[in-house]
Length: 429
Image 1 (cartoon, rainbow, N blue to C red):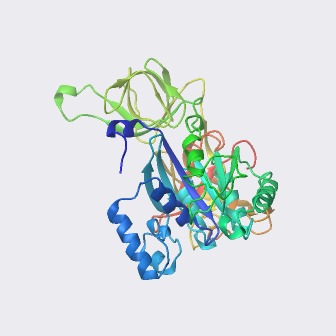
Image 2: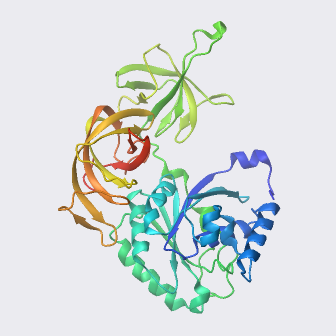
Image 3: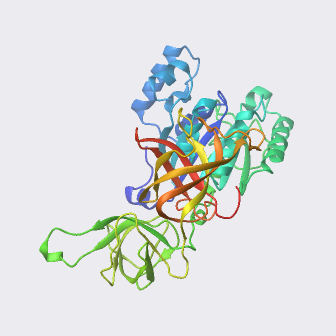
């Protein structure tokens, strides 16, 4: 299957992207087509799909079954869970999150999109922009996914008409002006037949852009990480058991922002103790610098008190240290949000508790209207809330840093994740 060496594969750039769209817009078929045409499906997987296609009585190879892995999904012909798939081309590695289209699974779309560098939003060429299109586009904007690709699918069912594609493009462009989408691309495709997915379509000579795969291979991802604000949440303190290394004390974690080098002065939050970086180590060797999103270990010149949940930052560039937060919340639980309710929070590597103080407004994701008179936040609702935490968090605005500006909210009684939040420090979203 692979046409490149394992060493080259490990060194390749990674793009995470998610798919979204209304029910039956062809999301799973599109991902199956990407994998099939890029020769990224193993023979045993392909044979299983062929057998399943025959059982369902389809006249063609049903590529949707490549990602619809659950038995319930295959029987119903829909996507229920978030299906993650991995593939690579000679230019780039990819992680795909195939998310459900049903409105009751909106929370799954949030899950799949939370770490994405790009989002593919499918629009059925027959139906045009729908309420679910608006919902998924708003979520992509809310999560500040930097690249959005609008795939107008099923062009074969509208006679590959250029005017139909242009009308949908015009309609979505008008809606997107209300959103924050930095980079927007449109591609007309037929996932079923492969037009403009991996290979250019002979049926749409009027389209002069790249295929979907070409767009995915050329999206710049290196600039999407915050390289200005030094943020290093400490995940683990390394103390070797051997007496030979009794003086060693390393702080392991993933760089959440900025660039760090040996000799840089850092401040440990919340203690405010200062030191300098002595070494930066990876699993291979010592490094001259580290930047987001690298996983590394720091050693410091001084033996200061640093624990899991603390954060190392640059002294001239500090996050906001606060217990009072305004958060844009996506609620993911059947049990409604409780005002004055107590919840647990995970923010980077830090665990705290909080109390929900108020609901500022809810958002109608189809019209983007703010609803201030309705304070009940239920499953799949998106709302702006205020909260107070039991101890300070080291926060950036979500628009400035997606990692230090986001959190998950947990019901302490069940240990279930019930919500995800994006912090706003610079006004409303």
